[in-house]
Image (cartoon, rainbow, N blue to C red; front, top):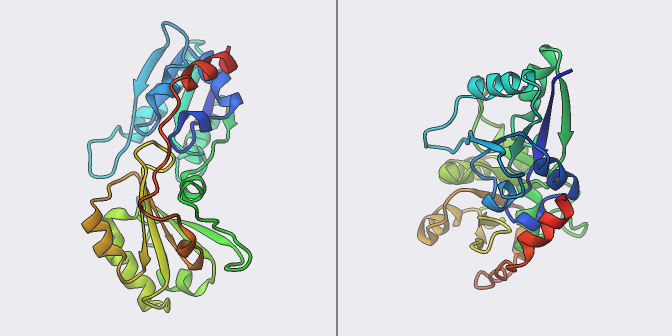
Length: 260
């Protein structure tokens, strides 16, 4: 039976790739890679592996999802080991569910390898404990960009939920999101943070209030990929001047040993 592996590559830093994911990538014949998958992850592929870059980035030219579906099926039917490498986790805003349904409808086997999702790891890398029990009773992951045929999130309901909000793909709509959450009941001084390039050496973040968030994002020049955190825990973020340590040069070699 033809088989495709949907592999989560984590939030960016190559050393946050799981051991299972590294081993599967290292044995692939074909890698279909998202735009946010680190080059160091793809470098784990064996010599001669075919790499198809099928990324999607907001506001940029993107690979149609139908092309990705057909490419996975075509290579799998040729008897090749096909690995779809996705940033973060395949099932957290990664269209993994769509791809699984498509392949299974064709009678193909689908293996899902979870990955660390940016909404939790980037927040942690900035010092934000999204479920600190002294501040919140939970966390809600939500997209700031509505999918095809879907309405905008119910920001008023989210404002009343009482959980930490972790918002993916919301940086370009931060003014609208901030306004709607305040209109929905959150106070303007609710702590908020934005983290760009989370877990990577170039990570940057700001900590501010919900009302000031749009202006601070613009003034700071933050760019996608980024997440937004709204809630009391955002006040616990590290000082903005504190940066991640540079990645260690021996990291790639260590991962290649694990993948062998």
